Image (cartoon, rainbow, N blue to C red; front, side):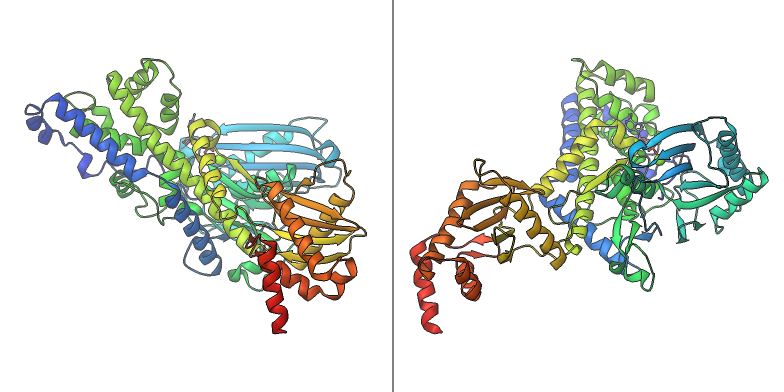
Length: 608
Ligand code: ADP
Ligand code: MG
């Protein structure tokens, strides 16, 4: 993951640098009413430009899918970095394992005794230290000695529950969240440092080799089994508990997303042999930039950053930047709208004076007079505020946080869309779990809600309403006499579906309703003598309408074959499909009049 450093920002760009002279002359000419109007007009414009109505979210989701696809193929689109993680935890893992996590601010070291499916996590032990600032610009040896020492300290602690089996070497999972070019699961070249790190002599080197050398210096005999970033680590960790996890998102200081991809859908990995046929791909979606609703404030922040023009999605949705965007808006409101009185509060000129945790704290203030908002503005930026100014500040926070959360949601739907389009039905109706980690998502309730709302809105709006997924006609023994699918499924998946539906309807007590949940959908079925007619539709669809639809189909068959029986269907299957096509096409009901269908069938007969 690539995140840029707070400390490395340049001074504020020209429009926000000492602009006082211009305003002091204007101030005396202006009435309070004019200032209020200017603040409201900035707010109105901000809300318009940051709006994320459904069409905007859809475009972002679609563009995300397209950029993922492009990135898998070649040089444009998202980076889509292969992680070389091809097998995920099953829950059966046993033994002692170590984990190291070098993030942006903290270094964590952990050991865990896993006891397999039944016992799961038997015991853990954990140490966390802030990375000393001087180490961020030390030498490569010094940084890795620090890591190896932390590991050695934890390994030396006596604990009966955390013992290595005799003869086994300690295995380490190394979470290293900086841009790394990987060529195998246990090696990777550091491309560059980010997040304020400037450790000399590490860029261009294999970080696993650096760690191995440091462990040797500490006399530690351990082995790095996997080098991953935080997103990949989150996916693997979540998979340990739930086998349906297929996507992981980081929403912390920075942001990233990864997901499980089929090897044969990764053109740039052509020729790679894999036992599982799958690999986790790190999308590096922070680099995404298409169709985003951006404002002059975003452009000003980007221009002042150490990586202008890069990581635009990250700069719009992640924790490092939300507070800074709000500061720039407030500065503009203070300057042209006198939001905080006649002069501009000095501290508002300081980049990053407001952090995302500050926006979050202000948004939790439920007091009538917004005292909490007032104190925070004063403590952080020495800003004195009226009640009406505090309300405006909250609206600015909400606008920026809503845009961030909603766009993060659209990104997630973009990933799911790409996976579903490619799955050829393999994930039809299956539960897909998205694992999410990071301080922003964990701590900011409003952000979380906006993100979830956006996912729901996008998924709920998909053109899946009133669509029949498939229709099956099976006898009691489970022989399928007719199967028509209106969703693309692979043959193996069709067999599974038919087997599951048969078991579901045949074993169901006749005194129950004719509607039954099936995976994430529902099946409406009806029995006629020894034959079961089953229709699969959305959970929210009208059962009675589909029950009628089954009956209509049977009546027409009955008319056509006069007293239809199973053998008629076997010997005249082409006619049965013809009849079916007359009233259901592409999953939608076309005709509900028995008379009309029978007349049309008569005409088709004449043609033969
Ligand atoms: P990293 O990406 O460095 O691993 P973390 O996942 O630890 O980061 O998240 C830290 C980030 O989370 C901070 O930069 C901040 O933006 C955000 N954050 C932390 N606490 C809060 C909070 N209370 N409210 C909102 N955001 C928070
Ligand atoms: Mg982290």
